[in-house]
Figure (cartoon, rainbow, N blue to C red):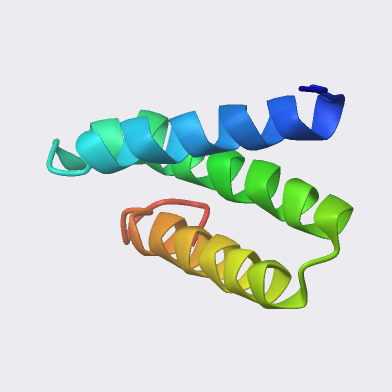
Length: 84
């Protein structure tokens, strides 16, 4: 079995999403600092792999997933924050 860099990226992405999903019930600060970045890294890793294998449905799915995670990150920014 041949392992290339794209498969390693996919494995890291998959593990990141699994860990982030298990941690999702934690408090807001932890979500913003650790969980959503893990989910975002996982989504990008799997998007890179889906582009490598040229799977259009998986590319669309991962792109939508990344946008959803980014939207959730934006929602977590406190109202009085200079970022909003």
